[in-house]
Image 1 (cartoon, rainbow, N blue to C red):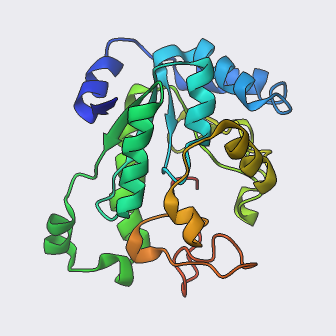
Image 2: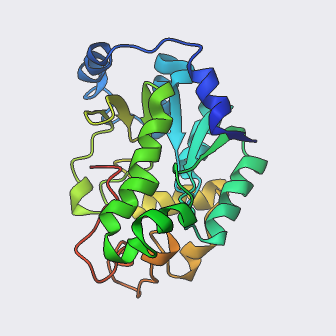
Length: 246
Protein backbone atom coordinates (compact mmCIF):
# COMPACT_ATOMS: atom_id res chain seq x y z
CA UNK A 1 0.00 0.00 0.00
CA UNK A 2 1.19 3.55 -0.74
CA UNK A 3 0.10 6.34 1.60
CA UNK A 4 0.40 10.08 1.25
CA UNK A 5 2.66 12.31 3.31
CA UNK A 6 -0.33 14.25 4.62
CA UNK A 7 -2.05 11.11 5.83
CA UNK A 8 0.99 10.02 7.81
CA UNK A 9 1.50 13.51 9.21
CA UNK A 10 -2.02 13.43 10.60
CA UNK A 11 -1.46 10.01 12.15
CA UNK A 12 1.84 11.15 13.66
CA UNK A 13 0.14 13.96 15.52
CA UNK A 14 -2.17 11.50 17.30
CA UNK A 15 0.54 10.12 19.59
CA UNK A 16 2.93 12.21 21.64
CA UNK A 17 6.63 11.56 21.18
CA UNK A 18 9.38 11.32 23.78
CA UNK A 19 11.65 14.24 24.57
CA UNK A 20 15.16 14.43 23.15
CA UNK A 21 16.57 13.64 26.59
CA UNK A 22 14.43 10.52 26.88
CA UNK A 23 15.44 9.35 23.41
CA UNK A 24 19.14 9.87 24.07
CA UNK A 25 18.82 7.94 27.29
CA UNK A 26 17.32 5.00 25.41
CA UNK A 27 20.30 5.00 23.04
CA UNK A 28 22.75 5.09 25.94
CA UNK A 29 21.12 2.09 27.58
CA UNK A 30 20.63 -0.21 24.60
CA UNK A 31 23.15 0.86 21.94
CA UNK A 32 25.96 -1.44 23.08
CA UNK A 33 23.54 -4.20 24.09
CA UNK A 34 22.10 -4.48 20.57
CA UNK A 35 25.40 -4.11 18.73
CA UNK A 36 25.70 -7.84 18.00
CA UNK A 37 21.98 -8.65 17.81
CA UNK A 38 20.44 -10.10 14.63
CA UNK A 39 18.88 -7.51 12.33
CA UNK A 40 15.34 -8.83 12.92
CA UNK A 41 15.79 -8.48 16.70
CA UNK A 42 17.00 -4.90 16.33
CA UNK A 43 13.94 -3.94 14.30
CA UNK A 44 11.66 -5.88 16.66
CA UNK A 45 13.12 -3.96 19.63
CA UNK A 46 12.68 -0.62 17.85
CA UNK A 47 9.07 -1.34 16.93
CA UNK A 48 8.26 -2.55 20.45
CA UNK A 49 9.89 0.56 21.91
CA UNK A 50 8.55 3.24 19.57
CA UNK A 51 5.47 1.71 17.94
CA UNK A 52 3.94 3.96 15.27
CA UNK A 53 6.65 6.52 15.94
CA UNK A 54 9.20 4.21 14.31
CA UNK A 55 9.61 3.94 10.53
CA UNK A 56 11.87 2.47 7.88
CA UNK A 57 13.44 4.65 5.20
CA UNK A 58 14.36 3.16 1.85
CA UNK A 59 15.97 4.45 -1.34
CA UNK A 60 14.65 1.34 -3.12
CA UNK A 61 18.02 0.02 -4.23
CA UNK A 62 16.66 -3.18 -2.73
CA UNK A 63 13.99 -4.13 -0.21
CA UNK A 64 16.18 -5.92 2.34
CA UNK A 65 15.37 -3.75 5.36
CA UNK A 66 11.70 -3.50 4.39
CA UNK A 67 11.58 -7.30 4.09
CA UNK A 68 13.20 -7.73 7.51
CA UNK A 69 10.77 -5.25 9.03
CA UNK A 70 7.69 -6.81 7.45
CA UNK A 71 8.49 -10.09 9.20
CA UNK A 72 8.56 -8.65 12.72
CA UNK A 73 6.46 -5.48 12.36
CA UNK A 74 3.80 -6.03 9.65
CA UNK A 75 2.29 -2.83 8.29
CA UNK A 76 5.25 -0.70 9.33
CA UNK A 77 5.75 2.65 7.56
CA UNK A 78 8.39 2.62 4.84
CA UNK A 79 9.29 6.18 3.87
CA UNK A 80 10.48 6.73 0.30
CA UNK A 81 11.83 10.08 -0.84
CA UNK A 82 10.85 10.90 -4.44
CA UNK A 83 13.32 13.59 -5.48
CA UNK A 84 11.78 14.06 -8.93
CA UNK A 85 15.01 12.74 -10.44
CA UNK A 86 14.65 9.01 -9.84
CA UNK A 87 15.19 6.35 -12.46
CA UNK A 88 12.00 4.69 -13.66
CA UNK A 89 13.35 1.42 -12.26
CA UNK A 90 13.53 2.93 -8.77
CA UNK A 91 9.92 4.07 -8.90
CA UNK A 92 8.99 0.63 -10.19
CA UNK A 93 10.78 -1.03 -7.26
CA UNK A 94 8.87 1.20 -4.84
CA UNK A 95 5.57 0.22 -6.45
CA UNK A 96 6.50 -3.47 -6.34
CA UNK A 97 7.39 -3.26 -2.64
CA UNK A 98 4.07 -1.56 -1.90
CA UNK A 99 2.14 -4.17 -3.90
CA UNK A 100 3.81 -7.32 -2.58
CA UNK A 101 4.99 -6.66 1.00
CA UNK A 102 3.11 -6.12 4.25
CA UNK A 103 4.36 -2.56 4.70
CA UNK A 104 2.90 0.92 4.35
CA UNK A 105 4.95 2.77 1.73
CA UNK A 106 4.82 6.54 2.17
CA UNK A 107 6.16 8.68 -0.66
CA UNK A 108 7.39 12.14 0.30
CA UNK A 109 8.44 14.92 -2.05
CA UNK A 110 10.44 18.16 -1.84
CA UNK A 111 8.57 21.44 -1.38
CA UNK A 112 9.37 22.44 -4.96
CA UNK A 113 8.93 20.45 -8.14
CA UNK A 114 11.97 20.21 -10.41
CA UNK A 115 10.47 22.91 -12.61
CA UNK A 116 9.92 25.22 -9.65
CA UNK A 117 13.45 24.65 -8.44
CA UNK A 118 14.80 25.38 -11.92
CA UNK A 119 12.83 28.63 -11.99
CA UNK A 120 14.31 29.78 -8.68
CA UNK A 121 17.86 28.43 -8.86
CA UNK A 122 18.39 27.89 -12.57
CA UNK A 123 18.31 24.62 -14.54
CA UNK A 124 20.50 21.64 -13.67
CA UNK A 125 21.37 22.76 -10.16
CA UNK A 126 22.75 19.26 -9.62
CA UNK A 127 25.65 20.14 -11.92
CA UNK A 128 26.45 23.56 -10.48
CA UNK A 129 25.80 22.96 -6.79
CA UNK A 130 25.06 19.31 -6.01
CA UNK A 131 25.20 19.94 -2.26
CA UNK A 132 22.41 22.49 -2.48
CA UNK A 133 20.39 20.26 -4.78
CA UNK A 134 20.66 17.37 -2.32
CA UNK A 135 19.79 19.68 0.57
CA UNK A 136 16.63 20.87 -1.17
CA UNK A 137 15.49 17.58 -2.64
CA UNK A 138 16.69 15.06 -0.04
CA UNK A 139 17.93 16.33 3.30
CA UNK A 140 15.22 18.87 4.15
CA UNK A 141 12.25 16.81 2.88
CA UNK A 142 13.38 13.79 4.88
CA UNK A 143 13.96 15.86 8.01
CA UNK A 144 10.46 17.27 7.75
CA UNK A 145 8.89 13.88 7.04
CA UNK A 146 10.41 12.42 10.21
CA UNK A 147 8.68 14.96 12.46
CA UNK A 148 6.02 12.39 13.35
CA UNK A 149 8.55 9.76 14.42
CA UNK A 150 10.92 9.25 17.34
CA UNK A 151 13.14 6.74 15.54
CA UNK A 152 13.95 5.73 11.99
CA UNK A 153 15.73 2.77 10.45
CA UNK A 154 18.09 2.90 7.50
CA UNK A 155 19.90 0.42 5.30
CA UNK A 156 23.24 2.00 6.22
CA UNK A 157 26.14 -0.47 6.24
CA UNK A 158 29.70 0.02 7.46
CA UNK A 159 31.09 -1.83 4.46
CA UNK A 160 29.76 0.76 2.00
CA UNK A 161 32.13 3.71 2.53
CA UNK A 162 34.89 4.82 4.87
CA UNK A 163 32.51 7.47 6.23
CA UNK A 164 30.20 4.76 7.53
CA UNK A 165 32.63 2.41 9.28
CA UNK A 166 31.65 3.70 12.72
CA UNK A 167 27.89 3.77 12.10
CA UNK A 168 26.26 2.40 15.28
CA UNK A 169 23.48 -0.15 15.13
CA UNK A 170 21.46 2.10 17.43
CA UNK A 171 22.64 5.69 17.66
CA UNK A 172 21.58 9.28 18.20
CA UNK A 173 21.05 11.55 15.20
CA UNK A 174 21.83 14.93 16.74
CA UNK A 175 20.71 16.93 13.72
CA UNK A 176 17.32 15.28 13.46
CA UNK A 177 17.05 14.64 17.22
CA UNK A 178 15.91 11.10 16.50
CA UNK A 179 17.08 7.61 17.36
CA UNK A 180 18.78 6.24 14.25
CA UNK A 181 18.63 2.48 13.80
CA UNK A 182 20.86 0.69 11.29
CA UNK A 183 19.92 -2.99 11.67
CA UNK A 184 22.23 -4.24 8.91
CA UNK A 185 25.17 -1.97 9.76
CA UNK A 186 27.42 -4.99 10.36
CA UNK A 187 26.40 -6.83 7.19
CA UNK A 188 28.93 -7.40 4.43
CA UNK A 189 28.09 -7.32 0.72
CA UNK A 190 28.03 -11.11 0.85
CA UNK A 191 25.55 -11.07 3.73
CA UNK A 192 23.22 -8.86 1.70
CA UNK A 193 23.51 -11.04 -1.40
CA UNK A 194 22.85 -14.18 0.63
CA UNK A 195 19.76 -12.73 2.29
CA UNK A 196 18.38 -11.59 -1.05
CA UNK A 197 18.95 -14.98 -2.64
CA UNK A 198 17.55 -17.01 0.26
CA UNK A 199 14.45 -14.86 0.70
CA UNK A 200 13.67 -13.79 -2.87
CA UNK A 201 13.91 -10.10 -1.90
CA UNK A 202 13.05 -7.46 -4.48
CA UNK A 203 16.07 -5.71 -6.00
CA UNK A 204 16.15 -2.65 -8.22
CA UNK A 205 16.89 -3.96 -11.76
CA UNK A 206 19.63 -1.33 -12.15
CA UNK A 207 21.76 -3.25 -9.65
CA UNK A 208 22.14 -5.96 -12.29
CA UNK A 209 23.10 -3.33 -14.87
CA UNK A 210 26.26 -2.26 -13.00
CA UNK A 211 24.58 0.34 -10.77
CA UNK A 212 25.48 -1.02 -7.31
CA UNK A 213 24.63 2.29 -5.61
CA UNK A 214 21.58 4.07 -6.99
CA UNK A 215 20.64 7.70 -6.51
CA UNK A 216 19.16 10.35 -8.78
CA UNK A 217 19.72 9.66 -12.47
CA UNK A 218 21.70 12.88 -13.23
CA UNK A 219 24.25 12.02 -10.53
CA UNK A 220 24.52 8.24 -10.90
CA UNK A 221 26.71 6.34 -13.35
CA UNK A 222 27.47 2.71 -14.06
CA UNK A 223 30.44 1.24 -12.19
CA UNK A 224 33.10 -0.91 -13.78
CA UNK A 225 33.58 -4.39 -12.28
CA UNK A 226 35.98 -4.22 -9.34
CA UNK A 227 35.60 -0.48 -8.76
CA UNK A 228 34.25 1.06 -5.57
CA UNK A 229 30.47 0.44 -5.64
CA UNK A 230 29.81 4.08 -4.77
CA UNK A 231 32.19 5.52 -7.37
CA UNK A 232 29.25 6.00 -9.70
CA UNK A 233 27.67 8.52 -7.34
CA UNK A 234 28.57 12.15 -8.14
CA UNK A 235 31.35 10.89 -10.41
CA UNK A 236 34.03 13.46 -11.14
CA UNK A 237 33.40 15.43 -7.94
CA UNK A 238 34.61 15.24 -4.34
CA UNK A 239 31.08 14.60 -3.14
CA UNK A 240 30.46 11.19 -1.58
CA UNK A 241 27.29 11.65 0.50
CA UNK A 242 23.99 13.41 -0.08
CA UNK A 243 23.91 14.70 3.50
CA UNK A 244 21.18 12.52 4.97
CA UNK A 245 23.69 10.47 6.95
CA UNK A 246 25.96 13.34 7.93
